[in-house]
Image (cartoon, rainbow, N blue to C red):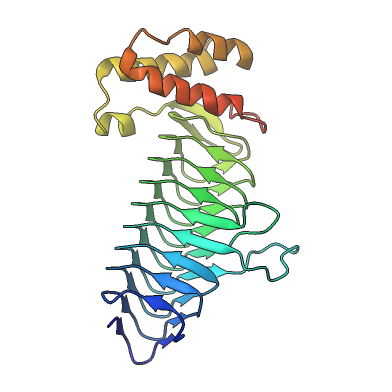
Length: 262
């Protein structure tokens, strides 16, 4: 049986794995599922159609699965899905999706999400991201994998953040941030290529050099976006292990309907 503090209120229809622990004064609604090994701190509210995977650590005062802050929302049974092994700190607020989009807000695996982070409706956050205190994601934001998002930053609705991107402290991001790019400021401006994350994941010196070349073609050569894309595509084959990075960058740029940080 799950370990539930006697002051917690857990709806009988909620599905909690046997190894789940629930702290004092927490409330868990009827449409909530929580997987093996996850812990929920005190004074949390988990409601809506919310599914939480394995081995998550949810700290006190988190609010997960509340209705979206969207005036068009009319009570539809939209969802929040959280993966495995996430750390979710105090006073975080994750809302469910809306029928105007996919109807799901989704958090992947192995994310480190610090206090006061807000994840609005229909956001999709990938895996292994570090999201610092008080970051605010508006609706429909997409975050890739292995990103670093600096504290007290705001991300405009529908913006995309690519894999291994880095956003500096207190940044206002209103356009897409390509993979491997480090940006900061209000409004955000590209600062450099982000190499430290890839380096920690074992990228070779040659592969890191290709990342730097892509950054220079995007931001330092005075090229149009279309010309930059053509030059980046021409890098294929020079360092075969970097071809996947080139393809990822080109796929991201092909879908940059909001424009990219410049």
